[in-house]
Amino acid sequence: MRILDIHEFRECDRHGCGYFGAPRGNHKHEGVDLVANPGDYVYSPFSGTITKHGYCYGDTTKYRYIEITGSKEIVRILYAELDDAFDIGDKIPQGQFVGIAQDIAARYPGITPHVHVEKYKVSDTYRKNPIDPTEDLKKKELEV
Image 1 (tube, rainbow, N blue to C red):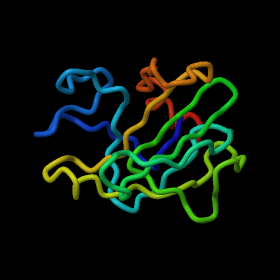
Image 2 (cartoon, rainbow, N blue to C red):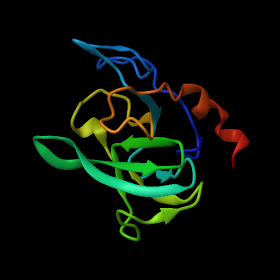
Image 3 (tube, helix red, strand yellow):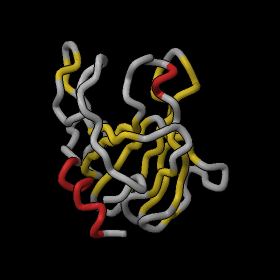
Image 4 (cartoon, one colour):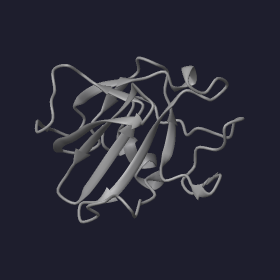
């Protein structure tokens, strides 16, 4: 599953760790963080449809996420701005450039810049049961 040109997993920093299931106060990290500099290209991990371009936080419209729905899975890529060439409902092929990474370090000084990747089954309508995408992200070199 390719999201970025280079998949480097975010290690621990003063804001926590980037691995799936890492402690986050009273809950667990529901995705995996990939190191990404602001402006890095973000790609569709599989063929599918852009189903959402939402806001990551309730207190600002600065940080966005892109949701792509495939035949079996849904992936959300947080801290990524959808490129103007695309809109919700657009069908895209695997590997298609879809947007750019945002600067999450501006909100959390000292954090390693990254995009956050969540994965769900299509049947998980309310996104309550995240699936660990780590192994899929490790396989990205096979799909380029």
